[in-house]
Structures are given as C-alpha cells and as structure tokens.
Length: 337
Image 1 (cartoon, rainbow, N blue to C red):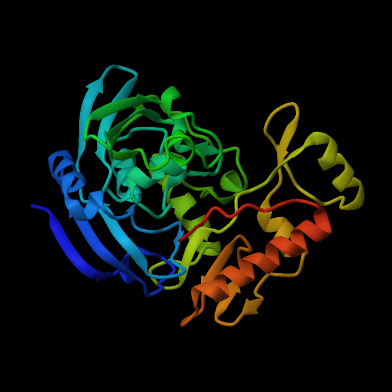
Image 2 (cartoon, rainbow, N blue to C red):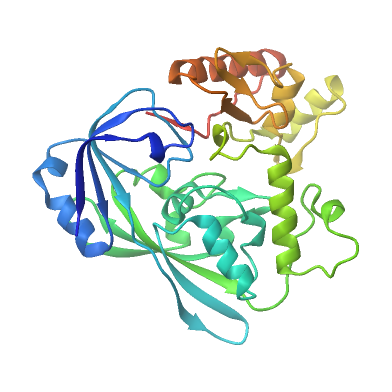
C-alpha cells in the first residue's frame, strides 16, 4: 500500500543531515504501486523528485513538490551458467548490502564498490565508482517505469550510455524514467581488481587474498579516510575528479611536478580533485559549520548545525581557488536542490 505523507521531514533522507521538508512524500513497494502513484493528481500537478537515501543531494530549501521514494527490495538470481550469475536487485536495496550478498555468495565484480552509501537505483543513475571499478562494469540491464504513461521498459547497459559519474538518466532522459530494478552480472571465476591506489599495500600479508579479504580491505581504507555519514553529515565525494588533456597535464606537471594522474585515453587523463583541493590549502578548513574533511579533501562535512548556504559557499570558494591556481574547473558531484 502506498505511503503518502504531507509536510514530510527529509532529515533522514539526506546524508548531510540538513532539515528540509517536502510538501508531499510518497513511498511505494513495487512497480504497480509506483504506477498508481504516478497517476495521482498531487503527482501530476506538482514537480516531482525521486530520491534514494539522499547521499548525493544538498537540500538548499524545502521541496515544494512531491518526493518519491522506492521501497522495492529483493535480490533474486535470474540466470546462471558455469561462468557467471545474473541477479535482479530492487532499486530500494541498500547498495552495500548488495555488495555484501555478492561477496557472501562468491560472486566477483562488486567488491571494490564496498561501503559506497546509497541505494541501488540511485547508484545505477549515478554510475558509482571506486578503486578502479564502476557500476557500469557489472550492470547487465536496468528496468524502468515511464513517468508519463507508466509503461515498463528495460534498458541494456549500452542504452544507459554510461560514462564517468554519468548516465542517460542524468542527461537526455532526466526526469523521464524511474529505475525500479537493476540486473547485475557477476563472475563465478576468481578475478580481483587490485591495481588501483593502495589496495595491494593495504591487503593483509598473512591471509589468503579472496573476496572477503578485498571487501574488508576496501572498507578499512574508506573508513580510515572517509567520515561515516551516519555520524558526520556528508555526501561522500563532493566533486568529480576532473579530466584534462594530456597536453594540459604536461603543462601543469612542468609547474607542479608532483601532480598525479590516471590515464583515461590517449588524449585524456584524470586528475584527483582531492590533490588539487589540498594543494590550495583547504584541508581541514571551515566556513561556518561546514568544513573540508581533514583526512580526505574531496569531502565536505557538516560539523554540526551547518546550513546549506555555508556548504554551498564553501564549495564555491574551493572551486574558485582551484580554478585560479590550476585553471581546472571542478564540477560538483552533489546535486543542489
């Protein structure tokens, strides 16, 4: 049965822990309930925002419209052969619970994405990524519901047009479809991605390296430098890592010999935004009750009682100084509402 509320607090639906209210809030538990919700006059006659756990949202004011939230859950095996398993995951499943399931059932491919906050549907929109892996690497298909007519449709991986922190659902099909379920294809064959960052150096030297070991190592790395959003308000990486041309990178390297990069193609490299921000002196610095995390400069935190305007202003100042010093434009990963 649909859950419909008015003047609903979104405090528990955004990881910055900012108080904001939606005029209406509707939660549904399956596709039929979603279709029913989409026909309601309050939905047809108001602006609509679909959210997961709000782990990449910054509410700058109350939302004068309808907030929709998925409670579609479940993880089911829908195909299996000697090499791989395909699982169908409800969009409302907590993403890290999905990773834990994959690891517990010896399915390879999701382990590097451990401890990323948020729900599975939102993860598929965002194309979450970490430690050399992106969600697009294991997505087989995405099931959606058309917002205008309620028609269900299946998008292939190619249909989703995945790119770095991007998908068709954030661009030309933004606000056209709602993701209801995601189909992931995982490998039965042992294949671990350990070449990114400091994973290898962080692995226990006395244990066999398996899925569980890799997951626990990723979790330990993340916990050592990223604040727990349940304890400290934050949205994880506030900015996307910028891509620059190889030519521009070489020019910057001449001036800043220590500037790191990760090759993307023959023409492009990815420069860590955290390094740029730290070089500009922002590590641990505050603006009001908003601050740059003292262990990971890519994270802006709510120290307690921060306002949305303080977080916004801090992000603006960071972008200005990085642009001034490196001539690189930082793009927020967080969505301002």
